[in-house]
Image 1 (cartoon, one colour):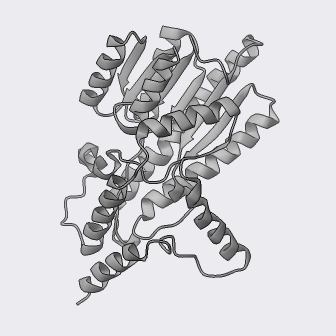
Image 2: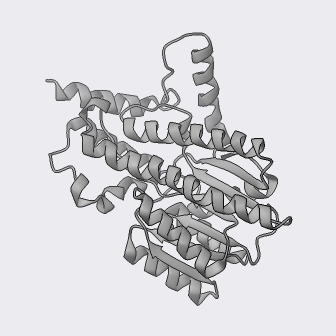
Image 3: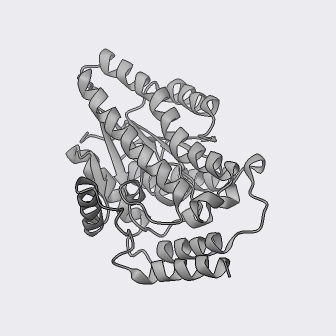
Amino acid sequence: MENFAGRVAVITGAGSGLGREFANEAARLGMKLVLADVDAHALEQATDALQAGGADVLAMVCDVRKAAHVEELADAAMIRYGGVHLLFNNAGVGTAGLIWEHTEADWEWVLGVNLWGVIHGVRVFTPLMLDAARRDPGYEGHIVNTASMAGLLVPPVMGPYNVSKHAVVALSETLYHDLRLVDAAINASVLCPYFVPTAIAHSARHRPGDLRHDGPPTPSQQAGQALLEQAVASGKMTAADVARITFDGIRRGDFYIFTHPQALQGVVQRMETIVHGLPPADAYAATPQFTAMLKAAVQGEGK
């Protein structure tokens, strides 16, 4: 996709972080926007700012865990604009701690947003985009699923997040192949950012009441949360940088969109261990202080 002006972009998780910057970049390019977020206040602020700049915006509070919410979002987009050209399945949350310490509610929350949100987006919007392509020979569509480098690497104490993002990578690769089978005028990408300063480390503030984790955090959960906050805050690349990189990838038709190519060395090492049947490589081999911090917290827990 090279032409954006006048076309329609749907963005989940649009109230802050990467989603907000995707919306800003899409508006700069003259796109019409359908914005969704579970945070009504953040969504309102984003909408007001974009409309003040002249953007055409439809905003809806949407919990992407719920199929009915995503279906209502699609219905509203079709009623308002008659079609969708660019879809960002972007909403995401995170949690930390030893994998066996996560509750059922932890798993349901993270997989619900990070994986089921993408599943619902692909399931609901792809048929609408395929139908538009059949009706319009000049139609161009693109779907971007936000995964993470944690979808290609396996850092410790990030179990539910890792599982969700690996699944998003697999879903996206399958989507790419399936679109090729039907010769669709729709491309697909998976975005794999590394650490970028966003509010992902504090996503628990939007955790629904029925999935709340009310127990005290374990030492590993405290250490994992501290590490996540430190790593995210230390990121040198901004969310706006990621948005520009992503739109450049859309223009080129890239499938894998990487924000930090240097992190791919860890992916190479992981693939080599798999091919040679070796134990999993340490995702923090280049930053041993992170592993030392986590080990000290976990081993202290048992004393």
